[in-house]
Length: 115
Image (tube, rainbow, N blue to C red; front, side, top):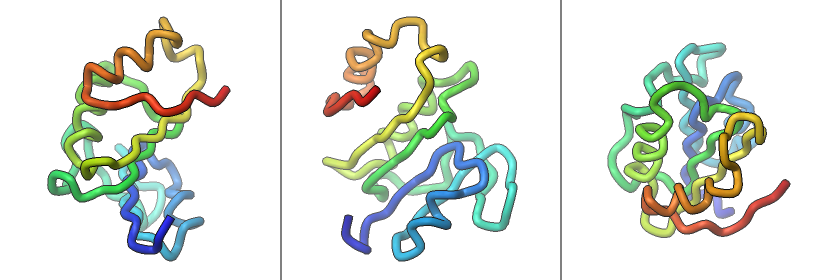
């Protein structure tokens, strides 16, 4: 990834992505700030303009009652051709095999599943 890549870590916890990728612009969001790199917000209402992010990441953070709103918000902030990366445990999904099809309804194209 080029140094100009903009990343949004959605449900970042301790903001490990920001601490690891120090040469990239990383926006770290969570409901609670565990350190000064985290911006506190609801992931369904991110304080970013439309199409400003190259990569959005949900790592063990797709939980709650408004998941659809989280996914829609990720789509809103991603640039055309941007990537949404999701790392989750299978047990959080009722139908893991149907997940890629569901994501298409939100405007995403499924690229790869890694188990």
